[in-house]
Length: 164
Image (cartoon, rainbow, N blue to C red; front, side, top):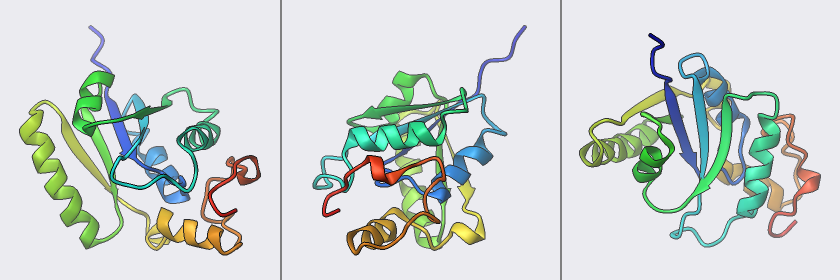
């Protein structure tokens, strides 16, 4: 009998997707058979730097050679999308202690809403700890070079972020 596939959902706004995000997915592929990178259309955030379609395309480019990774968008509760996609795990990366406290609270609420879904946390590699999407967006807004902070397969010249 074949064991069930271990499928994880990696949710976020990914505006933009960074090398830290990429590293979490690559490490998680050692634990999971499939990973869905779920780009949330977050109503509480006013628009994105990059459009939702651009973010989906960027992430697809970053994993174009990895058939076990799919990229989808969603609205609403992450735990509901996790169930809908058939994932039994929510994957999150932790950079700092503050990230842990925030993610712990969300994981506990998700567990109360969906007992069968487990949250899995991976610590960010030390060299990626200072990298986050907010800082990358700020560098982009000011005309800086972010090539060392985003996956090499993402060609930002194909996309037009706000203010670029």
